[in-house]
Image (cartoon, rainbow, N blue to C red; front, side):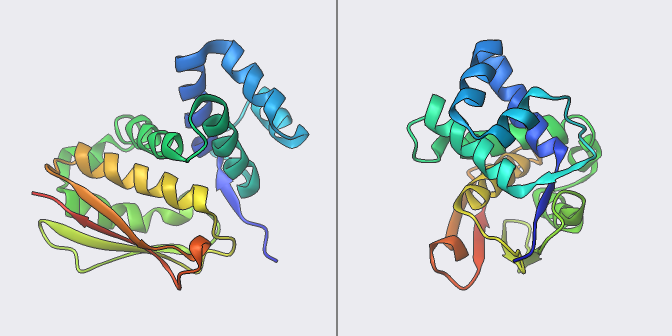
Length: 187
């Protein structure tokens, strides 16, 4: 089985959310509720541009959700939204200054390989008020990842000007589907 990695910026944004909402005590609790590997990564100085195991990304999201959410992954969606907020209002603010929701989603698909070393995000049927995004070829699909991506897309589209946004995850490989597909509509 292929080892999948994620950029440190995905982990850093979650740890920043944790510290903002729960302080150092929150970080301590999450580290105590996770594996030794998670504790090692979370206690160190993460580099945004370095690669880290995707399994650690999934575990960090799950442990935060179990510790401070209700264990149903709703908090993971919020963590995905926070990640979009953190990255798109700082390093990728140009996305929001020059692009529409459609443009932003299409550019995000082109940047997929900067954040994951597996699979790709394909945007199809993009119009001024809708788009379909599909994660294809991802070696280790995981429910946490799909929920986080959904949250990220949701906030990215809102920041790009989408109003009355609705995103439906129509299929998910982690739930037995043939693909991970997100259908978005907005005005």
